[in-house]
Amino acid sequence: MNLRRFLLGIDRTWAGYVLAVIAVCIAALVRFSFEPWLSGRGYLLFFIVAILFAAVFAGRGPAILAAVLAMAAIRIFGWSLGGWWSADLFAFVIAAGIVIWIAGYVTSLRRRSEESEQRAERRARRADDLAEELNLLIDGAAGYAIYMLDPQGNVTIWNKGAERLKGWSESEVVGQHCALFYPQAAVARGKPLHDLERARREGRFEEEEWRLRKNGSEFLAHVTMTALYDRNGKLKGFGKVIRDVTEERATERKLGASASHFRSILATVPDAMVVIDEAGKMLSFSKAAERLFGYTEAEVVGSNVSCLMPSPDRDLHDSYLRRYLETGERRIIGTGRVVTGLKRDGTVFPMELAVGEAVSDGDRVFTGFVRDLTQKQAAEQRMDELRSDLVHAARISAMGTMASTLAHELNQPITAVANFVSGVRNLLADNSPGDRAMIDEGLAEAYDEALRAGGIVRRLREFVARGDAEKSVEDLHDLVDGASKLALIGAREKGVEARFQLDPDARDVLVDKIQIQQVLINLMRNAIEAMARCPTRLLTVSSIPAEDGFLRVTVADTGPGVAPDIADNLFRAFNSTKSGGLGLGLSICRTIVEANGGRIWMESGPEGGASFHFTLVRADLDGLE
Ligand code: ADP
Image 1 (cartoon, rainbow, N blue to C red):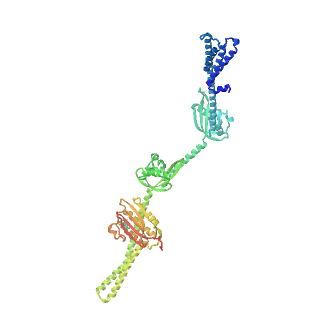
Image 2: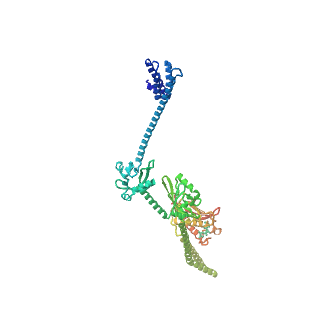
Image 3: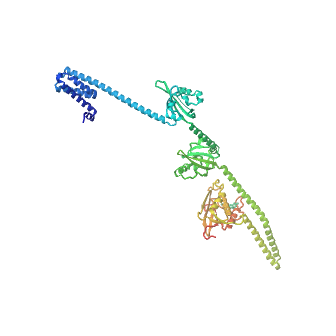
């Protein structure tokens, strides 16, 4: 192990002290070898050198140790310093003290200068690193041209981005005046110098202006120009940052144009349009919506869409939305539905609502298109009324025709019956036995004429019931569906709820479709009319299999029930409690049902209301021919 390794192996401080001991030993050795010539003098010089060495290379502590060791060596080797208080000792201590102080001072100066040198070196290295990073950053700023001008407007620094954007390389452009980048017209207007002056005056400005590329093409540039001053406030030059915004502005213009196109469509479409977010908050409200609901867009945007609905939807809408977001189960989205809306003035109106869904940037929005059905429903109701007036008028005219036909057709047989009966009465009054044969003949003729009159009435009834039944196998569900579409027009508005409880299995019947639908329509309309003034308005159409291959259909209502005075002859013609009623509907129903092989009857419900039952022949049973 050599000395260096030994010294490095121990602590740096201890190395200093070891160095001091070695220096004193060497000094003592050298002095010892010079003893023959110096004979007891000059030892201080050697030890002062050792102390100086220790002070310079190891610091003050080791130097003090060296001084103490030197004094010990002098004592050990018997070199004289006089007594403890001699002048030699005093001089040695003073000299050693001065040497130690000076060496220590010099050492600390040296150390400080070393440190500050290191610091400066570190800073310079850091500054280099930063400058390099900054250059990389500036050069890498895609789409940005970053360059510097001197106070006169000549290019001094030019980055890679500027080269990419404008086309000139650094060597081509450094030293050139910035007017190079302006279109000719702008140069002619003095724009380059004006910009330099403006930046000097305002410190910094931004603008969008056309600029030139090396290849002569122009681009719309977003320019930021900043005046740069040194510490003394002297103008150093200008920093320019330029970005090509040609496409950006073109896209913005296109977007703006399509947005205004969209707005103009929205302002003119007749359907009201309301856009809401996932929480039901309204985001936009079209002009038609403003007209329909009576709110302005500013009033409702931000509030919950449920304020446009009457109860119960008003209270349930949030839960509808939540359920859709959780389950994805569509009830109204993508399809239209007739619902009710609430205007600002409290009017509830029928409306057709179609809802579309869109997801953009992760946000989901729902667009509702609303069509006011008030007019349409009013028109339908009017049509309905007109239709029933027409039916009424047709019945009256049929009645008139029937009455005159009856009068005409029945006139003959009845007159004949009257004549025969009167003749028979005369013969009976004469009481002559020879007249017996004539009496029998007269009575037989009267009987035949009476039958003929009956036949005429029956034929007329069949005529009203639209002649013979043309039977075919029909699906009862379809029959009921078709009939209720007609019969229930306007029923919803009258507050009537319709329920259908049709047997899912027994559904094929052998009937004349049009005739049975006529029966269903008559019964359902009678029920709706009967419930007009009742608090509960529930109409139920049901079917169940009945005995002997029949299916029983029931039309039940929650009305007042059939008046007792007509209940017995309910299915006879001309039996009516209505002021404008003809009392023919139920009699026609009976004719039709019987012509179709079934029967019809009425039962009063236990809690009031009337239930009209009729049977139809089933066509879905095995063995049916
Ligand atoms: P109209 O309807 O022209 O009076 P209908 O033959 O259809 O002729 O009815 C005869 C009468 O039967 C009605 O006037 C009414 O009093 C009674 N009626 C019919 N259906 C019902 C019902 N669902 N509830 C109560 N009464 C009814």
